[in-house]
Image: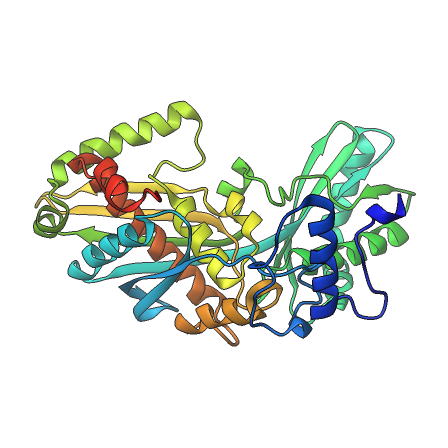
Length: 389
């Protein structure tokens, strides 16, 4: 069966030569011609740490939406937003929503807080031992914090949540992680903390590094309440004249439709009551080298609205667990880094700025799609622009 083993090099596996060797191997085994996959401009030296068994690059269309005026604490000004997608109409729709935002004076964005978690579980003989362990954790927090922070100059342990179930004590370590998303960073820090706990707790204890309450790469109600990533809010007052002129929608009708849509999302048990937060987040994540699996956590949120006395329409999007990075992971890869450059999000202290841009983009997309559904343009626009014949 050795002839079925994917070729690898023990010396340097991230080279053009090894990529071609694997493409030839796959062609022999499957018949697939990987000509286009093998066409790329990047230097393979940048790939270690990002990919294994490298064979080439998937080329995905990238469009630009905007500009969008953002009046944030970190993102201030007019931004052109790169969106990587294969869905026709999507970029045009986001641009349309951004036009409405601009005509209404821009979107106000606020990052409320930001944490990354690892959640070990400690197992004891009975529930009382688990309860008493929890008190010991509180009493020794500063020492635990010091042990965790020996692994990183960036990760800072802020607090630890605790829950008892049966004879197990679940802990949820909450860190700040600078411009990195930080999943691996906090995993390493929490391992060091758990080993310190195990060595210093008065009685023997066992632990599992993740008891699955960190909900890594999974949506959870816990993340809606206790932020995993950035809790960021984008809000705007839509002028009724602008909505009528550009979107052909009356704000009173928009308010009624939003109530109906929220009720439908509630009945369905959806993780987001707006039209489509995942579309903008996924497209922007792929373009900028984010961990695409984090869309699962990041797309969850709450769309809020209020019809004002003068007929204008207050609208906001709250994303409680938006996981973003401007350092590490795929953000340093050449094309992804170029897209971050478009946004001015390369360099230190840019993660909050990027989070505000993502939230503003989600709001723009929701404005556009909500109005398209109401005005009857949803199906016709896809017929015109979104059907690849």
